[in-house]
Image (cartoon, rainbow, N blue to C red; front, side, top):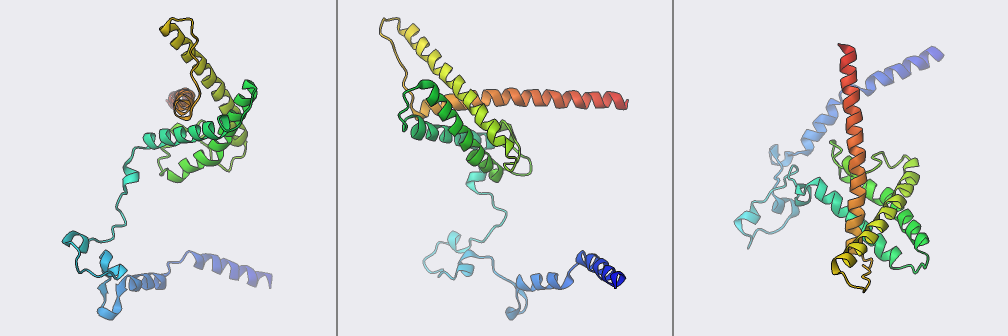
Length: 234
């Protein structure tokens, strides 16, 4: 009995990978209108949607579905989309957390905003990059930890990392205030306020600076390993 069950399982596994010719025939039949003598189904948009062609221009009347057409959003370079998404989410966190919550202690506010930004990046930004990327993984260059979002340890590393980024952003604001006071050269102290646009720009600049350093180190390590492997093979 055991041998019979084993034979049935093996036969089932072998047949699982057989080419389903009947399914191919069904697919070909579905792509043809057999009621009109086997002619191909029209790909004209007006014909498929049942719209009336009366009053349409010739260009609109002749429009057809193009499954390989590249939309306008896909024509935008990846680096522009990545920078804009990072900028928009950083500005959003500034508006809702830093400006929305009245926290008196500067250190507490800094840690809270950095932690929230880290959570937003891990939960929203990086998965969005994964959704938009192709097989070339072009958005890896804009993530500090370019690992699948199912790796839960990245949640805590992003949280800690963006607290560090916010500390650097704070020093950038202090430096800008000192520079403006030095340029003006008066006794009146200039204090540059925090608002979403400038905050987003400075945050993205600091973030991409550290990501660029990380990418450079990774590239050098890969280059060293490749050269070292080549030397061993020789």
